[in-house]
Length: 110
Image 1 (cartoon, one colour):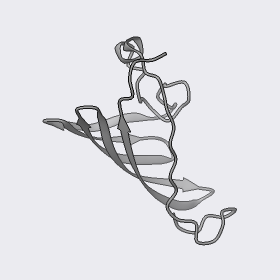
Image 2 (cartoon, helix red, strand yellow; image 1 turned 135 degrees about the vertical axis):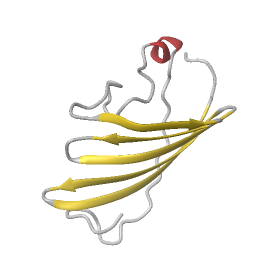
Image 3 (spheres, one colour; image 1 turned 45 degrees about the vertical axis):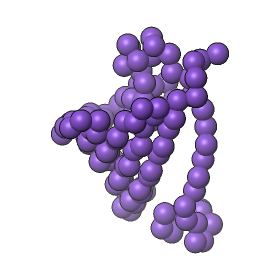
């Protein structure tokens, strides 16, 4: 990330690890990985566009009122890898972010 007001100077790559249990019912209801909201729902004012799929890789855009993101996700036998390029307007100033995620299946939900 570049210089963001309120963030430490030179702040760069950040790594986070977390676990999320996704049930079969979540997948059936379309609640898996939709949007950035904690409730799994698409944020208001957003829509998916330009969806394409070839083999185990899908690409799509999420366009919102003040933000857009281009995503590419590749599914593997035990998870997925995803790259996202996001552009937004933060207090009247453009902000760009690139994110890479990797997931892996850890076993059934407990």
